Image (cartoon, rainbow, N blue to C red; front, side):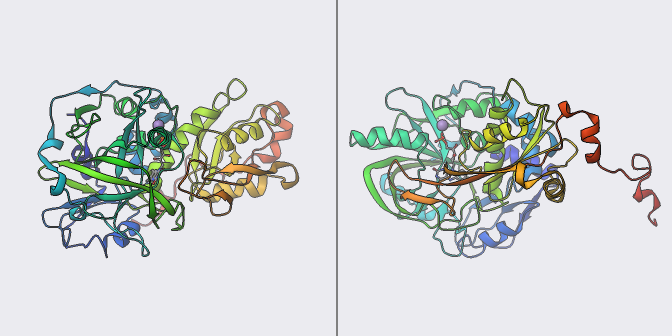
Length: 462
Ligand SMILES: Cc1cc2nc3c(=O)[nH]c(=O)nc-3n(C[C@H](O)[C@H](O)[C@H](O)COP(=O)(O)O)c2cc1C
Ligand SMILES: [Mn+2]
């Protein structure tokens, strides 16, 4: 059975990772707080107050453990596994129809305010955060899929934040010709579709072909009703529409990945929706965005994968073991065994200069440091890093446009929105292999006597 949001709910349930909430929960006043608190379990709201018959799924994935479940692996193996899988592609398969066509609403039947989009943060209005936007390059026909936050502004009107990347490049081409950009947005699918959409790769990469690679089977697609785009046949909901050419209106604020509101706000593009198609019993997909909640999980894996695959061949090859994107998404810790003097620094320069704009703090540690344990990372920085040699600040680098610490010479809305600021390399590795055993010996971690065989649990009162 092809993987979709329904198979994912079953998988979470079987793994004991899903909580069904039967009490009524209002998406505008209560849901955000519940999602933000549920960092361990996924929540399926079975009674969405004010929106009869709707259900809504959130915090699915709530954390890297859930992400590992979606990839069929463990947290420790998640990044290396996901990095390998990200190199695979499956062409999409066009089918005649599918569950997403159960209900078709066109023109004046469209009313976005009837969707149970939740209010994520205290300063906000309802946003669709789990919409994946499909658009095609008008010259090459290459398809793109990406997350864009969608502010509901009226029955058929939404505002969107479109950071200058691929969707933006497609929009720019249409706007130069003063024509609308046809789009289709699908809401609610298996998390690996979301991971694919959040992957920044080459422009030529079709994220639906990547989704097929990640899942291990082709994504099946159906034709849209009102434009030439194709959408997954088994999504929960699809919105078809157009980005209006050269129209900009105030948009924001929205709970962003670093736990701040004020990011990307200003005059942003406007979408008009022409058609909604959905399953008869469609389940809405809520995403709470912020630090260490669901939105962040959808960033952490694809970012990690892009950086991992970017740095693994620096200098021929790197003894690269693992990588973790840190809270706030502006930091990355790399676990590696350096062979040469300066190798860790060189790898960290790659971390700061990859397809991903976010990283500004790049840390390297050895294989004996558990990167999933923040105290161990801090321990390595404190005990293996000589600040006068091992910390390097690089001023004046292009950074993520939502990093509040950077200068913003050009505001959002246009094609040149960006920020610029400092980045830092922290080499917390011990002397490299080439330095020899004598140089590395002072950094041998202590191991308590009996560590391998004597277990505390065997001595606890029963
Ligand atoms: C939860 C989440 C929300 C996102 N929201 C936005 C957004 O509002 N606008 C945007 O431009 N990118 C957003 N992104 C990032 C893009 O989806 C991501 O960078 C993607 O790789 C861009 O695709 P593209 O390079 O094909 O354009 C979001 C990512 C995630 C995981
Ligand atoms: Mn793309």
